[in-house]
Length: 135
Image (cartoon, one colour):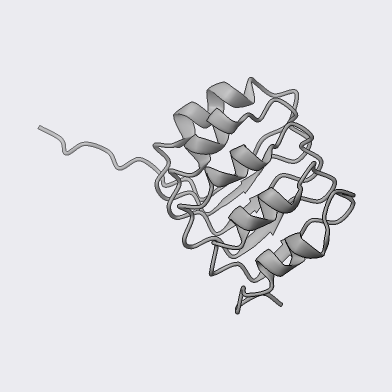
């Protein structure tokens, strides 16, 4: 009997908004334990439930959600378990001070882009000021 074939380990994934239902992908993606980079830029059907699946991707080091208008502060709470996350791009998302409070718990974040959100105050900036690794 032949030994079972090893499955390739997916480490980087880019999802085009038109490719498939992002929600369906995210539910399945929680099994991708070796995934290090996930690009969901402009995928407007990312929900808080979908971000809960992303939160299960414990090897994730880089998450790009540029322009995802459906992201909520409650959804961002679901990525707090990503203790290896170093790069987070939320440019042009609807992030507020509440979302920054969740991001402030991601102690390994080195790069963070929350530009063009328009809903961040000094209180929100104070939430991320303690991120020692932030450049």
